[in-house]
Image (cartoon, rainbow, N blue to C red):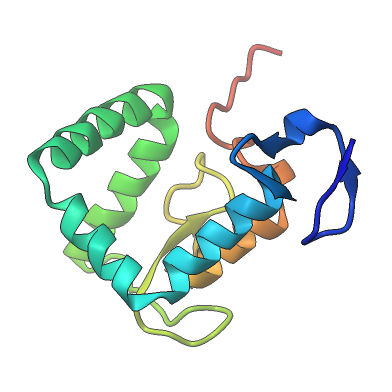
Length: 144
């Protein structure tokens, strides 16, 4: 058993990376996420790396996989995009912070145009605050 120097919780050795026994995997991942979000040099590097042909090809493949696994979510996203394009749906400012750089959050994919407009940061925070809701509307199965 090892005590994490970041969170202070004593955990089994498998909860730590072999190369870093000072902080647990959870704390280490949080530090990496924080660094990638707040360090401009890291963000610029990630932007450049995302433009490589290998990354682009992998993103295309991942998109195909996600669309196949989440057809209802994909249809809902497409419906919103088409409705915005056609003027049937208007983007509003973020419900939480007021930013005008928003995308649609669906509470229920069965109601594709019933959305809440959130900026990327608030949208990610919403999902992080309620992880138990992740996937609830991804594959609505009504086989009763």
